[in-house]
Image 1: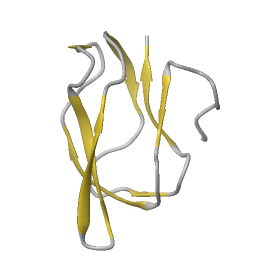
Image 2: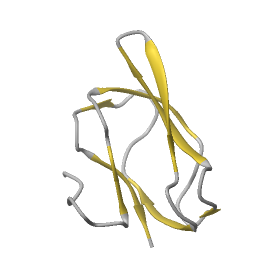
Image 3: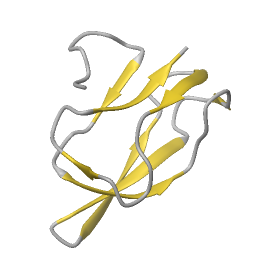
Amino acid sequence: RKAEPGNEAHVGAPMPGVVSALAVAAGQAVKAGDVLLSIEAMKMETALHAERDGTIAEVLVKAGDQIDAKDLLIAFG
């Protein structure tokens, strides 16, 4: 499943890689700037941060999952 461009509720993968760590769960409230998850690509780890305050509706990946660019990782409620 791919993240829809322009849909603020979708958090998509910025690059292909492997999910190295999840910092949130479904139902959790987050604030803008909170770390959502980390992606490892080419031996570098990149943290994805919440762009806005909200509640996590769904987490579609788990640690160790191989992901492609634009894959839907997290959906806000």
